[in-house]
Image 1: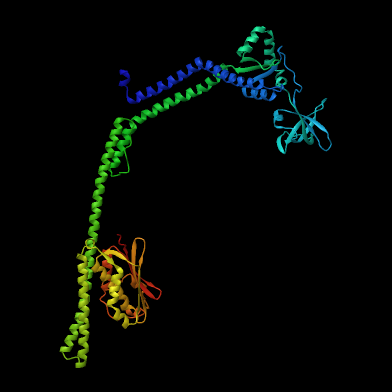
Image 2 (image 1 turned 60 degrees about the horizontal axis):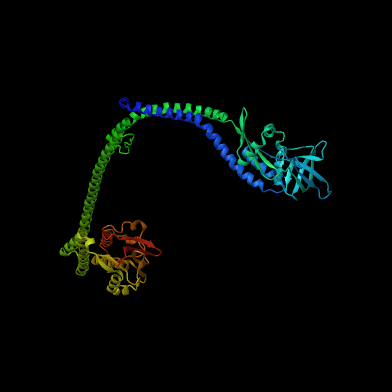
Length: 575
């Protein structure tokens, strides 16, 4: 044992595998040589005696001495010889020595006795027979080469000179037993002669006990059983057991081939295992190199022994921790980059927005400056001065509206919508806006309808959403031609509520739709179907879009048939 422990692991495995396979070979060889013969004989005898016991019980109750079918089945299934002898141990004769069927032609009443083999068992009286037959010399019987029973072809060996007959099976003849089949069998004749030479008392003992006597030959061992089945008949059964030596020789030849394969496999497996000893270390080293190159798709999965398993787990743990740390760094870098891009974009947007504000403020101020300077310089007449002053007043009013819109935008940036949520009834907001502009809609003869569900309640900032609803409705009134229709609808879905305003008689150029929510963007009125009644600041829809974005509402504007539709969708308030 100490020497074995001092061997290398590869040599230990080689020694164990080889020893185990050699031990199996030796044990199998000894089992075959020492135990197989007795096991084989006892197994065969147990099976045949069990079958024979059942067979004897079955034929003992037959009253008409017709044992053929049962004897044929038993003999065929058990590789045995089955004979019926009388009390003097002579073969009992049978009225018929062969299987035959008599076929009668119903038209001519001519009869044909056809000789058959075991196919007879599938023919019954009155079956329809079609056969090709040839006459047996010096006999009234006929050989059959083709047979069809009730239109079912049983066989067809082919015969050009045969005669075809058609008719009905009127008689069926078969031997009463298997004696005609075995009467010329050398084993059967020899064992019958031996029985007649035995002492009568010895025969009676075998009959009463059911024990066989054994007859040895060069190639087999015969077991002879005698059973009394009635007062006149004795069943003689000869079971021919092939020599176990021949079976053993066949198995030995087969096993020697197996042994050769097993020895070859032992050598191959030993070589493979010896290579497997070094393979885990190489594999773990390769995995460590891949991980050092930041390839984390590689795992060390060597579990052949405790050491390699522990080393693999340690390498994998290091790889997982390293990957997690690198992923965290990458995520943080990504967040920083996104934040930087967002800040850069916001700075650019603010710069553009401030530039746009500067332009929008500078233009009306310049107009007012020129107008006032012209009045002071006496360029305009008295009548013209009043008209120009009205224009200046309109520009001042427009600037006032623009400044208020700008203040709303700056307030929107500073507000936290999530902390200022209210329950808002959209129907109430819409009706309140309509009440405030009813004089304007009457003035322009606009037909305004409000179609809403009973209680369209949502979450949001009440002040901001009031401004959104008011802006959308007043925009529709402002840009809808006189005499046209405005439809306001509030629709409820499973989890959302949609507020929609459709105004008719006007459309927006398709290339302008995507710019409508940009600050200071105004549609060229020459490209629309009607002009607005008042000039806007270009900030209304921008404020609407920013407010809806802050609430995470879906919204949009699109052209419909002979009109424009603007909508937003909010989550429904749930109690």
